[in-house]
Image (cartoon, rainbow, N blue to C red; front, side):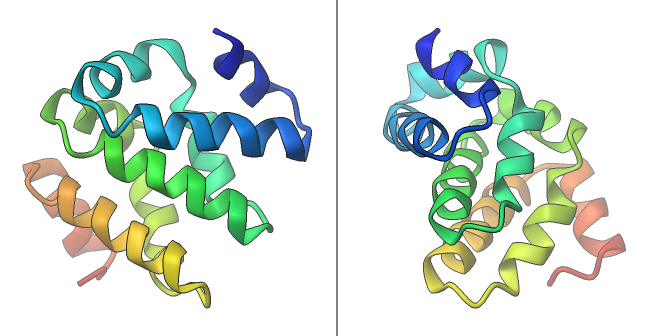
Length: 123
């Protein structure tokens, strides 16, 4: 709950700490399955396009970790994360690009994501 509350506060240090925690927690399947019910994917998606590359990297890592699991695909695609991921694939920051590509690769197993990938000319 503390992580969820910190994401709602627009303070850089809290956002960074919360995203670091989420990026580690979402590596584990039980947490990754539970996270979309407890955090706002819209907030995570907006932090993916934050002006700070460190916040971007951690936010897109959370999305990539969540995208590994099929039950999370619809909520992620529901916040139109694919458009943000397309932009992040073109980032100057290597780590941000790598995580964005990983997120798209994980989501590409979804038929809905495939349609978005095609329509946005991501690959």
